[in-house]
Length: 317
Image (cartoon, rainbow, N blue to C red):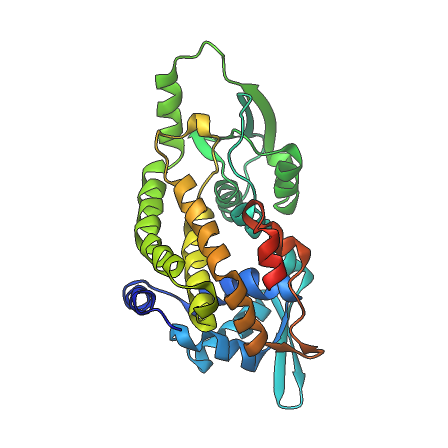
């Protein structure tokens, strides 16, 4: 049964929000296809994305571009094509989705990781790439040539610098906030280094947009939910959440403003995931197939998302 209030909310969302084909394909591959083995016939993917207003030509163009960029590998079997995640694509998905579905918050010991640009300057393009990746990884620029992060571990920093071949151009240091430090200057530093105001507005908007959907779904009997509608809700929710979350430096609660809406948005996304879980999986199995036959069951790690989807979700899928 398709719930009218949910249907209207989905229609309004698609009419007012820009949902680009490439970005949506990335979301669907990472969220839904990767846990089921990462391989799918192109025809199934086209059918899966049609309700979002993404036509066949747009899907074909998108997967071709993602293959050219090293995310996917296409294989032709007669007149049919299937696409699979490359090893590189899978690693990139895992990095991004660990951040989206993984644990957040926790206690902070006051320590900082600092990346200081030093030595012979890099070419402008490589320097921009370094800045972009530091920002994507959650670092904030606290001064010219000085980047800081309160929680990132050493191995993640080392991997980032190795990938960018930037080891010879930066110095990595560790520091700690003085326990006697007044709160106001530290709060000002955080505001200057990270655009938390924009993130807060985006999280608020996410909650306002999807909370009525969650309430409408929760009022309906679980056995009456429509599989395609559930898939669309989960996909659009995680698509919007991903857009915000990948810009979030995931600062510890001690550095966040009071009443931070990131926690509410995460809990709402987890709630929508659990409500739509069973019927979404049914829709995926009914729509997608692989060269080896039906879509395989979701891998165990899928059920660990958002701190655990629950044993009942696994049993019903």
